[in-house]
Length: 356
Image 1 (cartoon, rainbow, N blue to C red):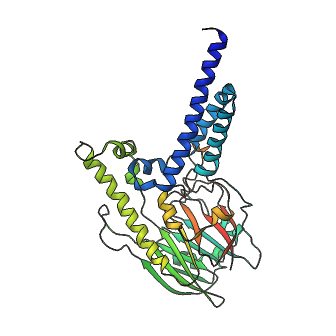
Image 2 (image 1 turned 60 degrees about the vertical axis):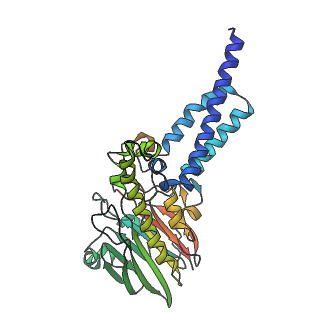
Image 3 (image 1 turned 135 degrees about the horizontal axis):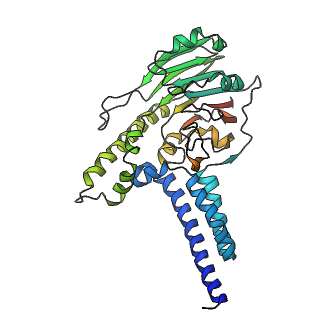
């Protein structure tokens, strides 16, 4: 084979690899968004750092240049677009929370594993009207007496949820799961609903903390990845498939119960907290349906919130999942959304500014 033939063969293989990659990430984005946790294998892929697909894109860049034709360059461009704006969910909005007097500002944070990282600097930068905390059982009294939080005239709690507000809380209640869950040793509340009086306007605030999928992912994630492909009825892996599938069915039942409560609202509402469902997946889309995701409307970057600082080079040693979010009803315009700067905290706080 002469040099010209060898170069033509290399270009053909380079073109095939680049086109295959583009088809792969487009298919992956579609599956994550529209199938997601409804399928065992895709459920695991929902939690994979998107940096993996970016790393593959960068490795393919020289091949796209070697092929140097319209098909390869177009495929490379499509693949890059889907990775950046589909899998990373990158946004170019300003992202800065509006702290002007006429804006309504809101902060949410799961404070269960802060690793001694103070929430106060982020809180002070946002100057929230309302802040909700998850994984904070019995901590309402501490915040009531804390001088760093004296701007909040109302501090109240129920279950693991705490609300700090410049406006009075009129009602509070826990949102409980309805029916039986197959994989839960105990049923925990899905959320707390607080009803506020905001200068004569009623406002429903849901502080959400759905069940963690940690047990379904850690230790056996490789097996779970395979169960969705080979765990058919009659195979030795079917029982394991059913065991893991039951967890995701329970998670879906929790989401359905939460959505039923939210859908019954007739007043403006804010739904915020730790959804334990990555924003790129189907379950988060189910929760956000009919609501505005403040990051998608006015956020900057990818808005990742967990896990704070990592040793994972595929995430640039920072977070790679967005499971903490603020969702608002159509009664609001969203003017800004931002995430707490990276810190040792397991969950980063999220803030948003709204207009009634």
